[in-house]
Length: 271
Ligand SMILES: [Zn+2]
Ligand SMILES: [Zn+2]
Image (tube, rainbow, N blue to C red; front, top):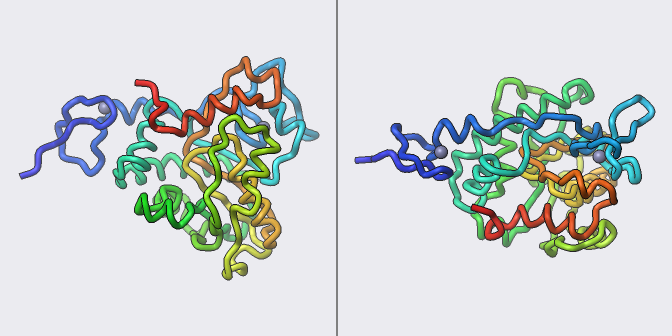
């Protein structure tokens, strides 16, 4: 006989048997991003560190300084509290049903791209894991989340899942404390487009990942895809790491980096 378990986020006893051991309250507490964000990378912008593109769109200091290789990145929510816990449940706890909830959130984020995406079917490409990491984990969370999002009606026909197009050739070092230049060096050659080049040639691509941290990973993927002939690359993630307003006076200092990367390490979690 099955008994309902406790919520894996707050610990409250669940009253129903559910595939996802998370209570309603914890799920309801996960809210989409609000406030003014950079029209390119989706980072929160704080005055007076606000810039504008030619069309009047808001730009963060970083995107104003260096144009990213992708067109636009969107995210559902902040990588903190309940949303971070839910992503950790999937990635480190192996709770696969969490991918369905995360996929729904990703689908909501993708809607933000509706006005700017091309009309042709778009190749949805999950950011790949290295084979050894994938074997160890048993799955690629980005793939599960992408598949769940694309199953929703709103996505029908607009996107086709193009996994196995992009491949991670090697593990990359932890980016803690790296300068933007070092991060780019660290990523160089990490990804490659496989035999199925036809899947991206002349097409728009939607890169999908669970978390957007510094943008170094999706930027490198975007460069590789553009070199393989993709016409434009978009990015959608479930979450993005928050940065503090105070760090906005400078262009990503190492300390700022450490803060945002630390959020990815489960042992560094508070609480
Ligand atoms: Zn709960
Ligand atoms: Zn930006």
